[in-house]
Length: 141
Image 1: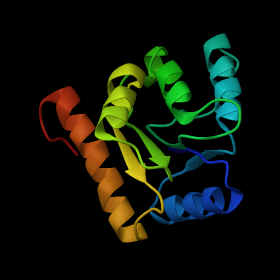
Image 2: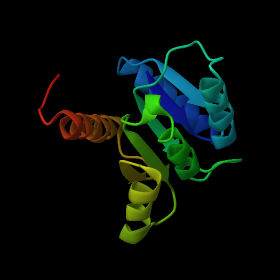
Image 3: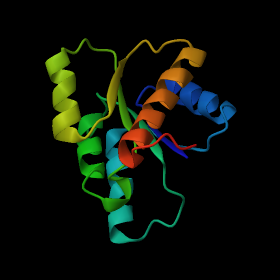
Image 4: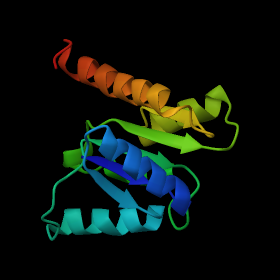
């Protein structure tokens, strides 16, 4: 299952649909605050649904920003090792991207507009595979 957090309704709907076509279940959120509230339920032990194995979030969203959510996710044992990718329409320096990676535990930042869906799938599955290799030290399916 992939967590997708995006405040632009059309982008959220499109990403959710495309990811489902790729064969993944989705857990969509329309704001960083809603993800934050969901994390409260996980930490309280009141959430009983499936947990995501990957997170794709916009950086600038109402309530909490994607990097703030990523940072919090990394404090929860369940999410220590899932790949987290942020999206942004804003131009970020390499230093800003590195800060998100080092301080917030983000694996990658990709720019908007997003690439064509085939290319996006290649990018995201590559990030997921690289994270798995880094964790296990071997390329496992």
